[in-house]
Amino acid sequence: MVTKQFLLKLIRKRSKRRGEDRRHQITLLNQLGNAVLLLLLMALWATEIQSLAISIAAFMVAIVFATREFIQCFMGFIYYLSARPFRVGDWIQMNDIVGEVVEMDWAKTTLLEVDKQAFTYTGKHVYLPNSQLITQTVRNLNFLRRYTLHSFSITNEPTVNAYSLLPAFVARAKSHCDFFRDVAERYKSVIERHMDVEFIDIDPDVVIETNQFAKLVVTVSLFCPTDEAHSLQQKISADWMNLWYKALNEQDSSAPSPVPSVSLVESTS
Image (cartoon, rainbow, N blue to C red; front, side):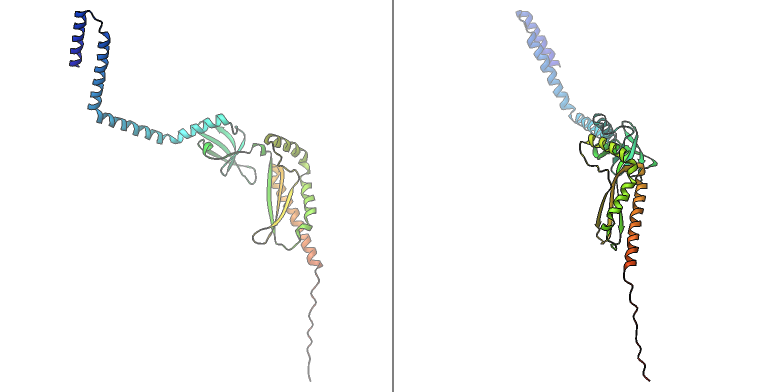
């Protein structure tokens, strides 16, 4: 600082004595002096500055780790606002959880849990952090809320020719679906138009196969009202069992009766 002030005074005196404009040299000398002073201070306080920088970095890392989940939840909420994969009132599935969206904020999504088998409300609330919207697959089940693709299986011993029962069984299954056929056709059209693909069959589909235990497995798939799925499953299962046991009884009654064996005993007197 003393050297800089001495040089500045010397330049000003010479400029006055000779009548020259030395403002450029004065400005340049000021800037060089400030730069040298800054370098000296940094060299003097290098250790302290380094410690301060490390402390600030450690503090910022701690803040990020402490608020990481909140940051991810907020980013998930931003994703929801931009993509709109569902709305409040929709049915969604995330991992193995199915439920109706009842509330959503920046941190969490609240679901009213739905039983996947019976399609009824369980009365439980599930709170999902919004971070899962980014890391997990979200399925929107809203178009299957009123109507669903329901499938179930019936297992029997292979004692009866199941294919002989198939026409009567399919006819009975169709008769159970007649009361909602018209509405199902309209709802099928809405779903397929929205998804731009035809994949729904109104009539019940029946597949007969065997499993790894050599048991007969009858699989029934149908497009039906969600709240009627369980009832239809019971009715159709009852029809199959009635046909099965009727055929089994007829098979047993038509089987030839075993001829009683007669043993002759020879007696000698």
